[in-house]
Amino acid sequence: MKRNIFIITGALILMVFTQSAFAKTVGVIMTADIAYYEDIHKAFTDDMGKDVEIVLQKPAADPMSWTNAVRKLTGIGVSVIVCYGAPATLTAMKETSDIPIIFAGVYDPESMNITGKNATGISSTVPIDKIIKLLSEIKNISKLGVLFSKSEKDTIIEIRDLKKSEGSIGFQSVLISVSEHVNKNEIKGTDALLVTTCGVCMSGVKDIVEAARRDKIPTAAVIGGGEDAGIVLTLMADPKEQGSTAAKMVKQVLEGSKPAELKLKQPNSIKTIVNLKEAKALGLDVPAGVSGSADKVIQ
Image (cartoon, rainbow, N blue to C red; front, side, top):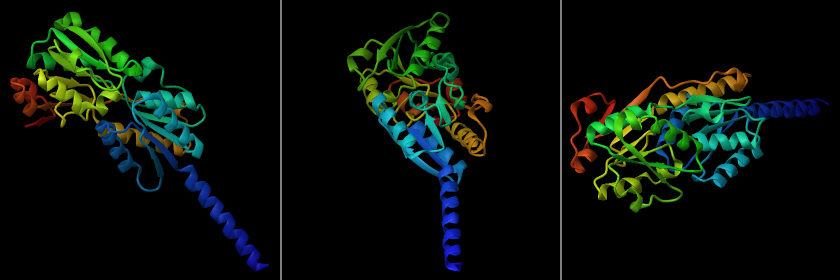
């Protein structure tokens, strides 16, 4: 009899332990080969600690891969799905309305109606007119090549915001859609390039920089991760703040809060990075006012 009691008690303890561990399983979708998302994820995992099991999916930057990643996480029954970037977030919202979704690294989530019953997070919106003004101090811009993806809604919104500045700053946008690789012929004739938060673009940012170098075209980006590859000017929402905020929200959800109860966060920390080494290699002079106001300068 005592033996049976011990067996039953042990089984109950194991069941409780298993359910507790299962309740603390967090799925993360991080589009592969994007350094900015890797920085967000590092901050996220550092703040989450070791009490939570994190299941990481690293899909390629395409709709089917994002969908498969979400389905894998829903299939194992994670308690929360964390998404970096708008495409992964929108895909997760389409695939599930039951599992809470926390996002980071999403440009203007309100315009895409991302916040809702089961989703909240932190925006990564930056003032696009600011980066164009800074870029125009480095080089006069008549035609600005804008790299985006037709399948990524956030990049379309970035173009919308960019076009509001055309008249006041005095440039014309040349839209360059990227599906797999940047078309080198399309960037010819532009004075500078702006890389949006396009996942395909950031996965191949080294190729973009190399293509721009051949025609002495400076590059700028509204997402981090390309500065060491040669992006001359970067304006980004601080990835550490993005990851830490996402971690705080996940903890609140695991403690019983609903995403609808957690207010969308706006970025408080916007970082500017200037790659002075790349600018000099392109034969460009960066004004002291631009480099002096940067949070980081790559020499």
